Image (cartoon, rainbow, N blue to C red; front, side, top):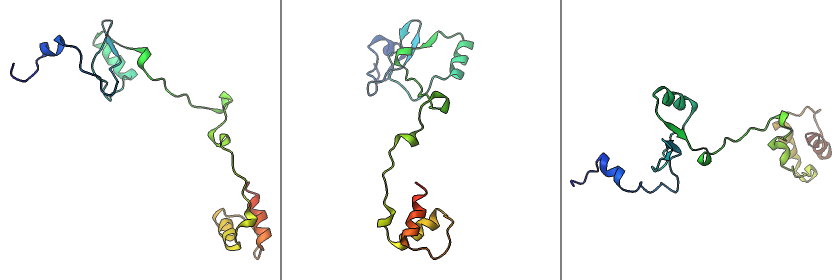
Length: 127
């Protein structure tokens, strides 16, 4: 033994301990791979190249994460914007110059020279 592991040595003993509890999800000839999981993904493109090389690799369906489905308007699911409750804001509590900056930021069309109450009313129209 010279300190280097050979191919025979690596197959004799038990598989290496998994990295943070994650093991490889591939199955070869009916046996699950004992190696720790890497960062590669087993995509359809890789699956196609494996089938062309006639390798007997398959993926363990029980250990693979499912893709998260996107919510669309067809699903009847609400968008995340509707899930969050918007707090009611009392714009009458703000200072006049803050209301003017608010009006300028949101490009609200108003006549010049509005007082605090009128600016607050215009701002409430956004809600």
